[in-house]
Amino acid sequence: MTTPMEADGAGFARYTYRLRVSSSARTALEAEWARCRWIWNECVAKSKAVHLHNKTTGEKRTCGPAQLDKMLTGARERTPWLREGGSVPQQQLIRDFGRLKDGRLCMAGGIVLTVVWSRDLPGEPSSVRVYRDSLGHWYASFVVRAEVQPLPETGRVLGVDWGVRETATTTSNAHDLPHAQHGRKAQARLTRYDRMMARRRPKKGQAASKGHREAKKWRAKTYAKIARQRQDTGRKWAKKVVTDHDAIAVENFRPKFLARSSMARKAADAAIGATKKALIEMGRKHGRDIRLVHPAHTTMDCASCGARTKHALPLSERTYTCTACGVVSLRDKNSARVMLVRAGLNPAGVEGVRPPGALLPEAA
Image (tube, rainbow, N blue to C red; front, side):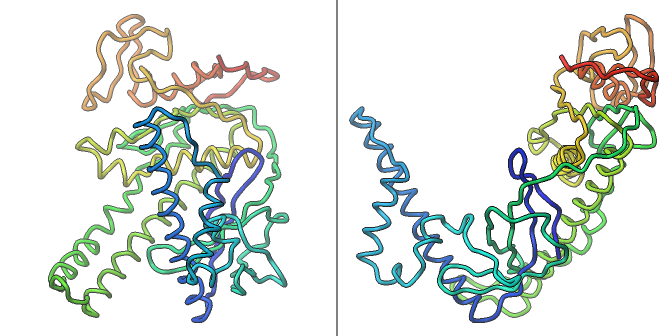
């Protein structure tokens, strides 16, 4: 199984593949994990000690890589358990280590893993990260230099406004993204598993029963499926948007504050952050012009004349009426047009079609 490609810095992309792990390899990986976790905790403790010392004495000691490497060397000399593991994963804390040989991932310590190659890597990987998810499945995530795959020009631009009633409202009705409600559709099953876990919860000091472990596993599988559905919905929509438009003005919306509101569950189910990330990455992959627009006052400004209302509109008010020019439009549609104006992509009409031969101006 291949999870969606993730951007890993400018000019690079990350490809993640499922791993087939034998029992001996799993034992070795878990032992390596324990050693690296111990080293990580030691690094955190040393960093806190240095910070506390500086705060108390006013000195400016550092806790950089050289000091931590020295600490690791001393710990390996004193602790046979650490010496049993490879020094490479301990120094890099499982980040970016390993190599490919005959299609298999060979890691330090003689650990050999079989990669499920659901598709070929587009290039030679510069690094790889191995990790395990909540279900106990192992994955290898490779960083590869990304190559732009240009798409034909369309002469169209698009404004995107994020919301809760609809995940994305755009200046084109054909490209709006309705709220898929994947989490809400699975809520009955999640509630059932929560009740099963509650009934079978072990007493303090006792091991969990088989029924409790199975209910916990089913619950984790359901959440993993919801996450995959959200990713799939966002990527398919992003692909359509990027294919049909040369330039896209996107609200640079950070939905963190919604987690503290009454709409927290619905906002999380909308997966605005993941969808925005998919759109940016898809645009970068295909060489499209993605312009992030600051979200301040986008619901208060008029896309036609630029006037701003004196008071913020409540969420219950879904129609925007400009007191200056009198234009009336749907609140989210007006915000999507404001994205275009602020990004310097002044469309000729609702669909965002540029006049023939017109050039996209630079964003302010």
